[in-house]
Image 1 (cartoon, helix red, strand yellow):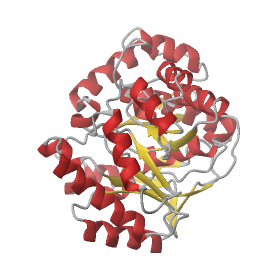
Image 2: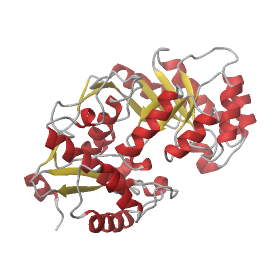
Image 3: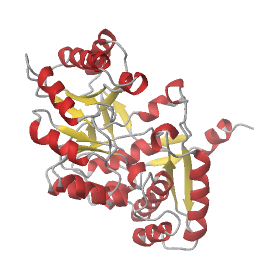
Image 4: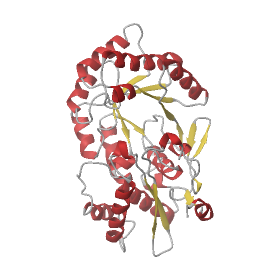
Length: 362
């Protein structure tokens, strides 16, 4: 991977074989400092899953998750990257066996081409503005502006909050009003009343209809986010709070979000992700799909999931571009700021065995 992801990125590719000659691919990926998982830990979980799932029906997704519950309980807190990899591989098998893309196995597609979102980490307003303009020229329709890095590294203060606000204002002024600007505080803004005051100050001179505020408070502070959603003019997005379908239900019941960011490796695969989406769509809560950070295999998988969502928010499916190389053929194509799914059975990604051999470190 590139140096951007070098610290703590641990992707694992798995292949699930069947006795009928069909195999499925899955990806377990993590950033240790973010998901609190390690490659060694995921390997142990995958080994335990393998023992329990050997000889089981790959079409029985319910049974597969029930078996995996014996290792990592369904309601256990934390991330489920290893479980997501197995789930992904099983849906790949079903799609190949039925000669259907995974999005059809999941129920069908609203679209197979997706507008895209990128994350922007620039540290000064000038750099942020230039980066925003560059990505808009490339066709991107969503920009996630990181506005918590200074607060997370240097601590909360009025001065540091002002620096974050100045980066955000530079981004808002740099792009057309039909480009999504998601201001991602990564839980760093701390106090709901302070956040509300900051938003009111931000909008004092000009209203930005494309602005949303993502995860300003701690992931457990559902009440605080509910307060912000009620009193703030800016839509509230939750990301780290979306741990499971049960967590999503609490978010919906407490009117705590206008939109969520859904990470398939956090919730445990397509099976759980679709439950989260169903709750959101019933409650008119938008859903953005996010890489974190996948190779081309995982990014293709999340686009299959995005295809099943009614509202077309831009998809973050460019994690694979951070890797120097990966041993895959097929998968999504990035063109003019859009991600395009292939019309192939399963995930539409195959392992290039020769390339894999050449990449193995001996």
